[in-house]
Length: 353
Ligand code: PLP
Ligand code: COI
Image 1 (cartoon, rainbow, N blue to C red):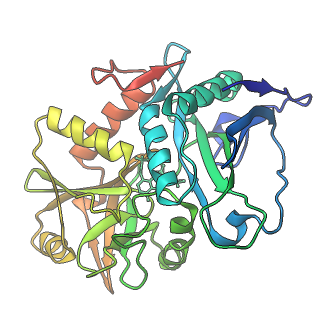
Image 2 (image 1 turned 135 degrees about the vertical axis):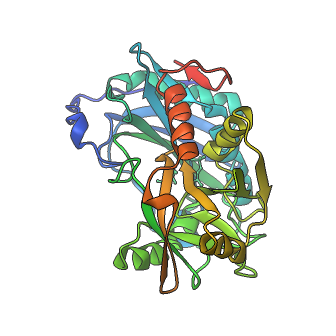
């Protein structure tokens, strides 16, 4: 795809790395590619970062035709820049697009656009360990008509945000509340797709948890409200009797790239990993009899996030003495070591630019 680049005339100053936070600052440019049912993908350009113009009837504003991805560009210890399994994000973007009747893009083409954009914005990849340039590709329908149907026009965009750690707690254990009112998604729904609506529908529960002093909620399945699915916007893993249990991908769970990578690392490190239905009942019994050794969330933004407290109704349990468990720490060290280029990548996951 031919890419036109219009450079900004007002380059920004990079904020101090200690003040980055998550998703607050943006780089100098944004990538925009248009699509129409007649023309396919056309008019790929990198423009100065700025506001976008939308017709008030645009599909995305009324019917939520929107999907996104999240991946990071990491500053390696040797000063270079690399991505982590970016093709997995590209593939998931296309799976999400397919679910939402949005257009897919050739995988190589999408990866090449991401790569060209990151090269242009290289100076915004921060240098401190744990910081990164968070990349946010997204795609939305913009038919200028209120009819409900698959879109005829869409826009793919990529913006980037130099970021610090996602949780203000960093790698410290967080408190989690079991959510038994709202559900995130249901099988047959959009759980496996990274569409904006899933997140809009999940913030109410997150806010309720925050009011009670918890960082996030633990989602139960939407059909029986019996099985554990995810934690906030992360996948979840439990260590019981030395074994690792993680909910299997039933269609309502987002297939996390960090989840997939953790499973591979855990197996290589000699752990037994079970991907299966895991009920709340089983979790409560493991909490009651002290068998739950560790629990953690996995996701690109926070990498690995230990769960230190779990609240079920009025009852609060402390997990693993409220400290970071041995397996959680090991996973964090191995994954971040590979991502930030401090440790040899024996898996073939990194994608140097
Ligand atoms: N689950 C949800 C709902 C998410 O939004 C994310 C984040 O992308 C994840 C899990 C973790 O996925 P990944 O490890 O690919 O970032
Ligand atoms: C993750 O990367 O783990 C996320 O869930 C990203 C979030 C900002 C949607």
